[in-house]
Image (tube, rainbow, N blue to C red):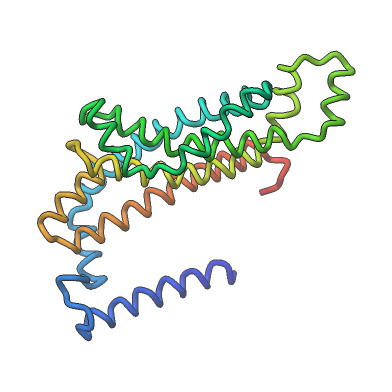
Length: 246
């Protein structure tokens, strides 16, 4: 019960503090709209926000899906071939030193303003946590179990599918949850730089119009979309590992 009450009280405290700051005019209204004006903007433009939100969510899911396929495949290959692990792992780590906002303009320049650069940016952002966490799970299997499987004549593919993939599922979902949060952020960043639809495009338009109540409304929707995706991942996690009792 406390786990549900405490977060609610914390959020309520933030909203009340926000309202006090606005009403007392400690912060000017043009810099920080009141919670009421934000809620009004949210429901007033809900149909438009929902349309843009569906575009962003769909793009994020597509990029995330591709990163899952290639991330798991890359982890399995690096686990199987040690020389590829030694060669590719440092490069994977190096890619994380480049911020997504720096890559996005190049992708738009190369691929235009369609969906392709957005999906590629999401893929690049989500690929690392999925591949690295899956690889960590694959390499965490007890060597004695591997030796036992080999002594029974199991092939490398059978060892991978019957032992290693199952053992790596917990690590995989840990990386997937991180990637799920990153995917929405990456989609919005990509939409900032060009396009016709999406929450990032909507955010850019209302920012130029100095409609900060709508800016806060779209931030709330981005948070809700991220929570929705995280909840879907959590459901798949529970369904995939019923023996964990989570």
